[in-house]
Image 1 (cartoon, rainbow, N blue to C red):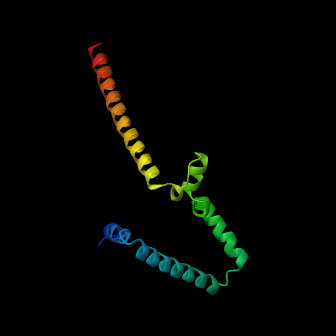
Image 2 (spheres, helix red, strand yellow):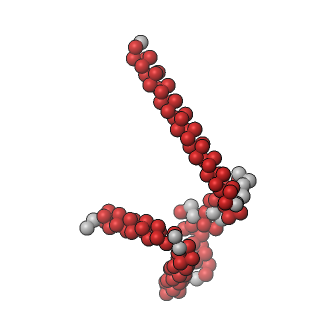
Image 3 (tube, helix red, strand yellow):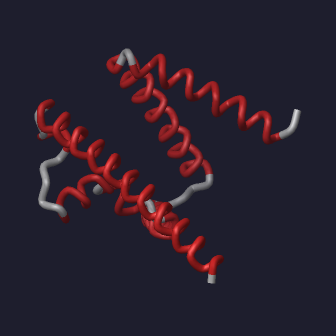
Length: 134
C-alpha cells in the first residue's frame, strides 16, 4: 500500500463520516468537542513533559500561527472579516429567507457568468476565423 492510497482511503472515509454526522448536529458537536478537548489535553501534557514555560508556549504558538496564516482566521474568522468589510450581517444573524435570497442571487450571477463566458468564447472563435482568412 502506498502513502497516496492510504491518504485517499482516509479522505473518502472522512467524507462518508462527515455526511453521516452532518445529519445529526448535536451528536457531531459532542464528538467534535470531546476530540478537541482530548487533543489539547495531549498537547498540554507534552508541553508539561518537556517543561515548556508559559511565555515560551505563547511565543511558539504566536509565531507558528502567524507564519502559517492561521492567527487571524482562527481567532476572528475569515467570514467575520469579510462580513465586516462588506457591512453585511453574520451568517448566524441572517434569517432563512435572507440566506435563500442570497443563494438565489448567487445562482443567477453564476448563470450570467456562464452566458458571458460562452459569448466570449464565440467572439474568440470568430476572431480566430477572421485572422485565419487574412
